[in-house]
Length: 581
Image 1 (cartoon, one colour):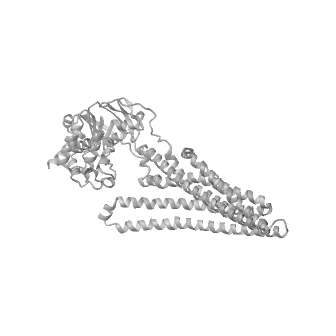
Image 2 (tube, helix red, strand yellow):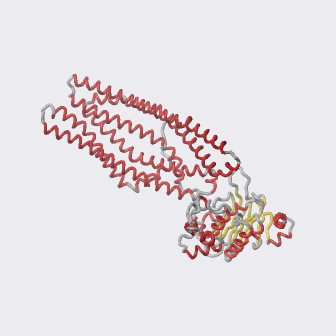
Image 3 (cartoon, one colour):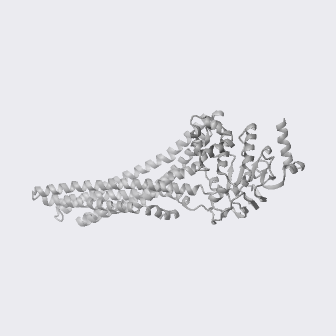
């Protein structure tokens, strides 16, 4: 069975070439160590056949010291090689993980829709680490194993070709053992990896949904489910992997022992016939031990290489440039831009109904456009396409007449700012979460944005002030505080095009009015697209776009739409009647 090197492996050369001096030095050190180690059996032969029978004490001392020195030098090369290899591994892992992360976050929404966050995290952390090991195995251990195998093999034929033939007699059996065990071990490892992913995904989901589990009193069910998944992982995965590895090790040790006995038997016959000397026999036994050790190393190398090939194959596609990366480099001119959707249709997946179907509209520079409609009408999809989180199946989304697919990502992010429904906050301080949008912002600018978002007084009252760490996804803040922090962040970004996707959805009515006033002030001189379900937040819009079933069913000013007998009027009457009640 042959294995094709994955397409992404060509990128491996770049990581290796970056540190070619280090690898060249390690190769040289390894070669010197193996050369000295291979010379030890010849020193032993000289000691037993020449120095001891002649009772030349000086030569005996020199040879003993040489054998000890050779062993010491070889151990030094092993340690130096190990240290250099581990340092290279850490650096390669760091480079690989950084490059994968940079490419991953540039992927479009479909990439993330097809995979869970747990799967992606596993590929970024665990698979990347194992892929780095694969790279190191290929470059360092492959070379080291080859010279460690070649040295004793050459030495064996120099010492006695008959004993060398006996030594090689067991090699085919060892290869058959590996061919028998390895495919089964690979299948078991794949099963273990899949079951381990199931355990990890369930645990991650259970921790994220811990409040529901406690509120619904389903802790015992969750515990039983995790126990069941763990039991499957042990019985169908881990136990089988351990058993097969134990079989392979014991079969290998047995074959190795038989090989050494066969070498010893042939050596005794050679010595008894006078074709060789006792010193040569002792030297050959040492050489055979080195050979079998190197052969075992190479078989382990081959097994490990293929064991780590699966993680590399999962990592390699992530190193390819994202298919949604823009080919063009057209900048967007300064000032409030014009936005246009031209016959845009889009579906998140092929088997789902399209949330937008043949949608066309324009937003003039400095215009405040509200996009409203019932749940599932396609409102948020408008923001997703404009931010190029997804690409439309047909039609064009343009800013100032330039298709957004041709605008560099950094340029698009400079022009467009968004306050989403679900705020994305890091487990960092308030200050660091703000500076994501404006790394060079000074203290005064931070405070000004926080005041505008009605959050400065709260932040200033905390013991650590703006340096307070807000927890994972801002868990130490209330929903309204998280939303206001997101608003402050986009105000710091100061984009000419502002998207408000239910920007005040997590706020109480009083705070919503204050934030709405702040957003109205911030909207001056910008093009604004406000996506809203609550119509009270878009009363001041210049124009309202009404979506239903993925199509534009009406548009006009709030006053015009209220006079028409349509969806907007029905929504307006329902919401404001409920508010009055």
